[in-house]
Length: 211
Image (cartoon, rainbow, N blue to C red; front, side):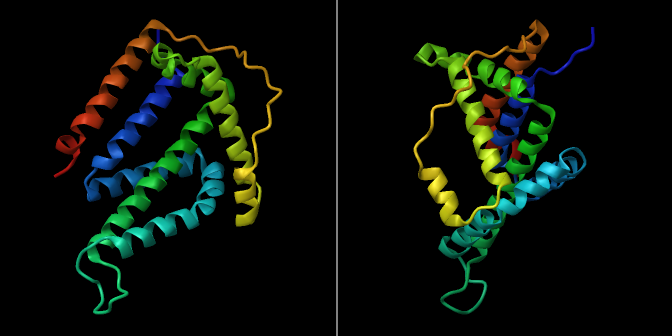
């Protein structure tokens, strides 16, 4: 029997990528950025071209904040000059945010709403011990993603976006029940290994990836 990734395996793979980003050495970070964008261009071109222009002000703001607020040597002999360390950190953060956005578009290209809900449901299972209802939480997260995506696909001014974000939530008429894609034993084993890998990367990431 051939092995097929479950949606939660794709989600775990994406979370592992996110857990490794803070620890990647800058040259390796650029290689990962290039690889992710090449994959996104071939597999999620339409989604990528829609999402990146919406992020330009966020990326610019992150770069400016890091460049002009990080202590270090000035690039120019003027008091208003950015610092060398700030520019390096700003570029690194822009690369990380771009990787997150592009890799998310790749994942969403291959997963429909039912798959996303199933992935979130299984990933949230450990939080059942804390009193969380995984099915309800998964559906609410899925609806939030739908609302955010539809908001980004429309052209709004900054004031309109702010008003939409600050407006009270309207109760959805979508039922909470959802048909979940069952997780096979092999897929569960792979998921457990992925969770271990995520935890190891988050804990020992600096020793693994930083030169």
